[in-house]
Every structure is written in C-alpha cells, then in structure tokens.
Image (cartoon, rainbow, N blue to C red; front, side):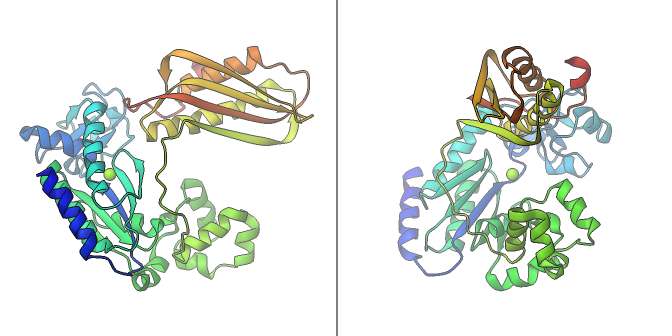
Length: 373
Ligand SMILES: [Mg+2]
C-alpha cells in the first residue's frame, strides 16, 4: 500500500502541474494527541478525553478531544480546572513517543508530494508545492492521512503561509479551506485583528485601546502613526492586513538553541534589576520549550558590559528541565555566583540548549516561582 501511495504521489505531481498562485498548504492535525488515543482505544471514542494532567487534578491539559472542548476544556488549562468543568472526563497520560511516531508517519506522506516541508510543531506543517496543483495535492494528503493513519487533518490552501494557516483554522475538524486572492480581499477586513500573525494579548489590548478591533479598523487607521508606534512590527501587521506575507517555506533543521536578550535603557550594576529580566526570559523560554515539547540541559547567561566586552557563563544539568521555575533558579544562580559586576552592564541575555525531545508539557505559569527561589 505504501508503495502504491508513493507512486500515486509521483503520478499526481506529473498530471497536476499548473501555474496557479495557490501554492502553499498548511496541514494541522485535529486534536492530535486526543485523536490518537481515541483511535487506539474504541472505548474513548465520542467521549470527553483529556490528554495530559492527571485525574487527581495535577498538571496541565495537553490536548482535549472535541467532546471535552464542548465543556470548555482546552490546552494549557490546569487539570484541576478541567476536572471541575467535566468531572467524568477521561484523563490519559501523554505518550510523546507514540505521538512523535505518528507525526513521522504523516511527514512521510507529505514527502510523497513535495520536498519543501516546514514542520512548525509535532502536528502542523507548511508545504510548498512549487507550482503543482495545491488543491489536488491537499485532497490527496488528507485522504492518505485518513486511510493510512486513520486520523483527520484540517488543511488550508493559499498563496502564502499566513493565509494558508488562517485557512486551516477556519473549519475544524476535518476542514478543507481555500483562500484565493479574491477571497482574501473580502475576508481579511472582516477579521478581528487578533487573527493577524504576531498579535497576542498585549498587542490586541493596545490596538483595542486605539479603537482598532477589526483588520478594517487597522487599515483605516493613520498609517504613519502605526509605523511610528510599532516600527517594523507595525509594518508587518499592515502587510498581513493586506494579505501579504513574503516568508518562504523552509526545510528547517530543528533549532539547536533558543535565547532572549535585551539591551538596557540604562546601564546597571544592580543584580536585582538584572534578575528581573532573567525572570522574564525564563517565562518566555519555558513557553517556547513547551510549545515544541522540548526540555533543555544547558542554561547560559550572557552579559555585555558598558565597554562592549561580552561574557557568557553556562551550567549543564544532569536532569533536563523546562519549567520557568527551574530555568529561573538556574539562571539566577549563574548571575549571582558566576558573573562579576566590576563594570556596569548594558545587555543581558539568557539561552537554553542541549535539548531533549520529547517530553510531557509542564505547568507554564510563574505562580510559585517567587516564593520558591
Ligand atoms: Mg492541531
């Protein structure tokens, strides 16, 4: 069957070559972890299933089945809260080995149709079909995934990554959505600004405060003001608002490290002040690690003094970590005991590397950090 499908892929490529602008596909598996568990255990089918967290209310929800979502349960919610919302939900521990295996199986299907594949998480990827017929290929991929992996995927097809992802999100589960340039032109202005890439809680609130709620509001707003206020990001926002995204599908290697840094407004020798940044970095790095289901074994602190001299100090641990509490504790320890404060500091940074994959998601909030460290 595999061979047949591969052949199908090759033939398909040959017959569907066209010059359509629709060349990007975004594939997003539906409630991935929960769907795998429901697939593998008939008893779970049609029931509210929660993957991650335990029935006694510890940990966080990794994925909720669609039945569980009806009760308001969603990813990253404390299991305790999920339990309150649906006391008879079935809690299943995460089995990352298994999910990773299914993820690889799906990636093998993608490879039949194109070699331009950019995975963005365990259950999502962008594909560039490079001039082939994206609609036919997206249909074939959905069908292969359904038949061979026995799961459903939602796909979005468009002329760039931003719109393809927007499309796959519009009808879930089992969605198939095409955004042509004509559709984009009509659709985009009606969307809430939140739908534009890079608009999180903070930016959304700021925009709302200016009276900008929809993409149309944004387009009608004083362009100069937006550019002045947000600089490059403001420019990007306006590009997305016009349906423009020039980023390409990259066959990315898994990142080897991730980091955050900031150049201070005012140089300082005060370690307490620097620790505040380490705390912020720990929080965002924990988030980034958890999104990719990674743990790290090495934490590095980077300092640049007012004479532009740079030093880095690292600690490598026996046990991998990923919570902000742990990251902060290690980061602060390096800062306190291994960074000399002989000169004022102008830049502070934090980096994590030496990744272990995969792992179970952990609590992301910062709640218990301050008391603990
Ligand atoms: Mg998904």
